[in-house]
Length: 162
Image 1 (cartoon, rainbow, N blue to C red):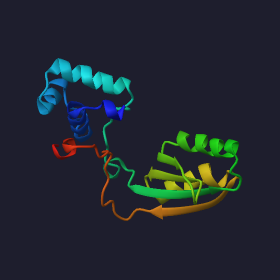
Image 2 (tube, helix red, strand yellow):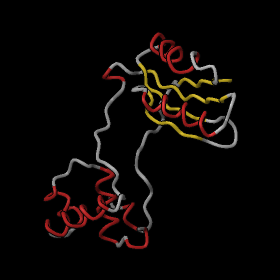
Image 3 (cartoon, one colour):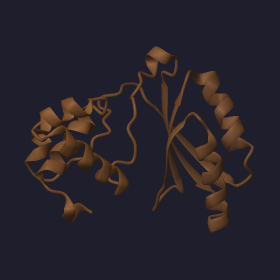
Image 4 (cartoon, rainbow, N blue to C red):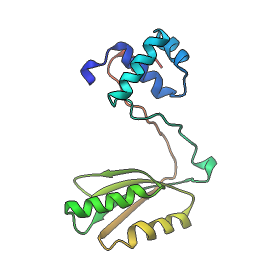
């Protein structure tokens, strides 16, 4: 769909990435189109899958989930059925914010948000150490979050407008 995106679409996407809570009226004003045009275009972007979903980004620290962990997971057996089985278990865990199947190197990289080290221990017992197919776990504990952003860089001048 990228070739079907015009300057108005890019401005809409840029504005929504900055603040998805904007009302249709406010979004239309920010992008300089009529509310009807804005609504129609956003609906088209949703239907085309360009906009996957709209979310609120919460503060982990204020909600008692201040331990951020990046995990590299290597499985013993890498057959498709084993990779699929581990992935299915990982994505069911509420603490797993992101699950990436990667190559080369480990089989998976997980981004996990937990309350504290006891919660991390329980998580590893539940997901990782009880699975006989997990060969290696490498954990990286965040000591400082220097940047966290969900925005995707958009082509053209739209990205500089918000």
